[in-house]
Length: 336
Image 1 (cartoon, helix red, strand yellow):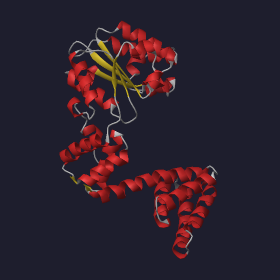
Image 2 (cartoon, one colour):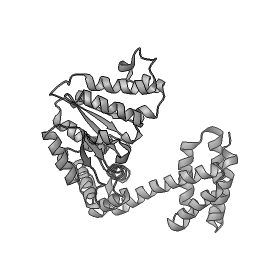
Image 3 (cartoon, one colour):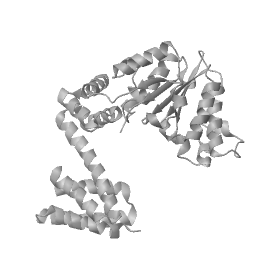
Image 4 (tube, one colour):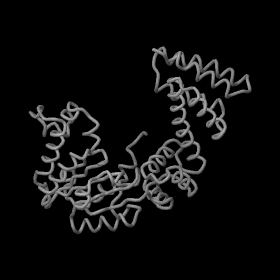
């Protein structure tokens, strides 16, 4: 995308959140600060809701709102955690700590400092389903120790993965996936602010494509607007159809490279028969994917092979046969 992401430039305030129950519960938390347990499916707007609350309650949210993605800890090595600029100052001279001790130390240090403004700060632990139980027990003790000046927000897609002692210390904020109508309303607010030409059918199509995922809906609308200059049924169908096809083509090439030809041909059949793409359209998508997958001699060989197949596609009638030959040849042409 060319410019800033619309998910950032149009981050919602509490009153902009599409789910009324979430608005009501965050209003209560704004009036009466408390620990929160925010849970709901992917793309439902959990993180955006917590950011909206932080912007509302803190005079200096840049310093008094700390956002920690749990995956930043548990999916990384000790060296990666220690060298992360967000944690480096905490862990300077602490190389002898175990990974669990590092994580616990960063959390304690974040919770212990005095708020820059107001009476408390907010720490968001996002994607909390990644937390091991021993760390959750340590988190419970930190929550008990620093409750006076720190609001903890635990956000997760899997509420049952969080131990009962933590859940019992938090006010629950269930975040359901937005309805189709709510997604359309979110998109309408943003495209009107951006001054993008659009019609109702275009926004309806984008909302349906996103299937309850707010982030996908917003970024799909931005992609369509940047590609076509407007959001209509036709432009959204053309742009988003290409994106979906590209994802399937990537999966098809993965299968071909791994020697899973039955899987690759099955995806090919779906694209040709169920989705209705022509052989030429698929070859174009394959070459788009190839330019990001291969370099140098590999890419040159794929282009040469594609040229041969493209000639067969023009001259012949069996698109499936010619594209199947292409997929079967991919491992040999891309082998280093």
